[in-house]
Amino acid sequence: MARAEADRLDGVLGKIVVLVEDGVPLLDAAGVTEVFTVAARYGGPYQVRLASPGGRDVCTTAGVRLRVDLAIEEVDEVIDTLVVTGSVVRCPGREPSVRTEQAAQVRRIARRARRVVSVCTGALLLAASGLLDGRRATTHWSWCDRLASLHPKVVVQPDSIFEWDGPVATSAGVTAGIDLALALVERDMGPEAARRVARSLVVFLQRPGGQSQFSAGGQPQISCDTPLRKVLDAVALSPGEDHSVPAMAARAMLSVRHFTRLFSREMGISPAQYVEQTRVEAARGLLENGDDGVEDIARLCGFGTAETMRRAFIRVLGVPPVAYRGRFRTTGICADPLAGNRSAARAQVVQTY
Image 1 (cartoon, rainbow, N blue to C red):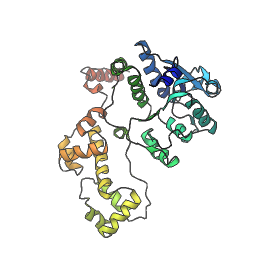
Image 2 (cartoon, rainbow, N blue to C red; image 1 turned 30 degrees about the vertical axis):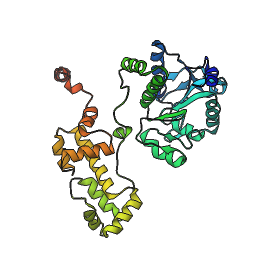
Image 3 (cartoon, one colour; image 1 turned 180 degrees about the vertical axis):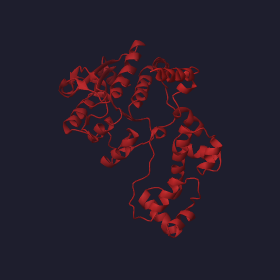
Image 4 (tube, rainbow, N blue to C red; image 1 turned 90 degrees about the vertical axis):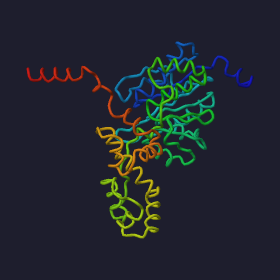
C-alpha cells in the first residue's frame, strides 16, 4: 500500500458500514456481521455499524427487527468497507427494485470507502449506482439474467459464489455473503485468521463448486406453436432416449441444418448443450430422491456411462455426481441411529392419543 494511501486510511481500517432497509433478508446482514464480529475477537480491527435511509430500524424478511446505528445520509467520513445487502427495496409480490436516491448515496459513500461489496441482490443497487460498469459481478443465480438485461455494461458471472474486480466485490445469494466476508478477512488478516473464523462458524473457508449446483433448473419458456415445442417436450419427458441432432430434426420435421440454426437462435444454446443440461437436471432429481447407483442413473438419463455423466456434471454444475448427492440428498438425520426409535416413539404417542 502506498504511503499516501496508508496515511489516508490510518484509523479507518476495519470501519464497516452495512446498508440495510426494510425487506432485507436476515442472513444478508447477520452473516457478514457475524464473520467480522468473530474476526474481531481474533484481533481483527473490525467495527460494524448498520445504516439505513433516515436511520430507521428495519424489519427483515424473517420478521426480526434490526437496530440501526446511523442514517446512510450521515455517513460522511472515510470508511474501510461499505456492504450493500440484498433486497434493498422489495415491493410485495414484485422483484427487488432500487431507488434513485439510494443509488446516489451508495455512489457518494463509495468515494469515501476503500472497497464496496454487495450481498445477493445488493448487486442491483451497485449496478444502478454505476459502480459495476465494465466490471465482473455476480448475484443470486435467479437474478443473474435480470442483472445482465438491466445493466448490459456489467460482465455478469452467473456461476461465481463471489466476484472481485478492483475495489468492488459482489456475492451470490444470502449465505454467499459469508463466503465473501471470509475472503475480506483473509485479505486483511491472512489465511490463518480466516481459517480460525471459518472453523468457529463451522463453514467452509472455500465453498466447493459454484452456485449453479444450487440453481433450480426448469423447462425454458417458448411459444407453443414453434416446431421446437415437440422436441423440447420429448427431451424433458424421456431424457434417456435418442436425442441426437438428426433424431431431433426428424421429430421437428426440419432439415438438420435448418433445425440447428432455429434451435440456436430460439434457445440461445446448441441442441447438444440443451440435451446435456436436461439430462443433468433429470439425474439431479434421481440423485437427490432415489437410491439408484450412479451407473444406473447414467443409463436412465441417457449418458450411457458414469464417466460421461461425471464430465457433464462438472461442465454444467461444477461438481461430480457423487459429491452432488452427498451435499443435497439429505441433511443426515436419517443416518441418526436413534432416528428409527424416535419415529417409532412418535407413532406410539399418536396411537395413544
